[in-house]
Length: 205
Image (cartoon, rainbow, N blue to C red; front, top):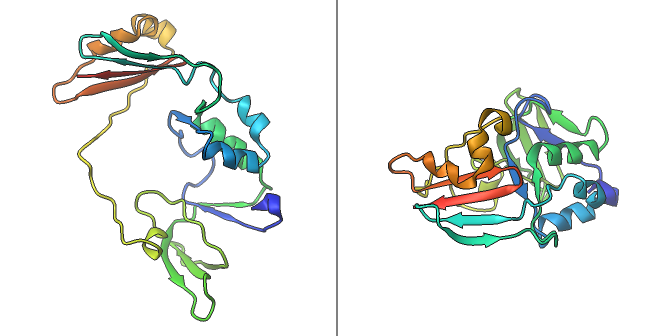
C-alpha cells in the first residue's frame, strides 16, 4: 500500500519483532506470494534469502524406498526462505513506527454511515478507526466473521515439530542420511517430515 502512496499502520499482537522464533522454512509460489514481493519492490532482496536446493523433495515409503525424488531446477517456482528472514525483510521495508507492537484485537465493529469503515478495539481499551481493514490474524481471526461464517475445525491431522540444532556436529548420522530419520518412529504417527540442509524429506507409512 505504501508503494502506492497509501498511509497504513500494522497492529501486531507480539510485543516486538524478536519476541519469538517465526518457525521454519516457507515456500513462496510464483503465482501468489512472489507477485506480492514484486509489487513491494523487494524481489532482488528476496532472492538473496532463497535457499538453493530448497525446492527438492523426496518421498519415501515406510521402508525407506524412494517413491519420488524431485530436484531443484533453479526455476524459482516455489523457492524456500526462512520465515524469520522474510519477516525481517518486510519489516525493514516500511518506515519505522509503522508497526504498533503489543496490540491484541478484542472486537471489531462496522461504523454506521461509513460503508467499509470499522472501529477496532484492543485489550488495552484503545480503539482506532480504519477506512480499509485487512485481517491477517490467524485461525481465530476477529476479522473473518465480518466476511464469512466459517470457523476453525480440527481436521484430524496434527504435526509435532522437533529441531536437531547443529546437526552436522551433534547428529551426524541424521545429517548424512535422509533416511536415518525413519528411525524416529512413534506408533500412530503415519509420517515424518524433515528438512535437512536444503532438502525436504517426507516419509510416509
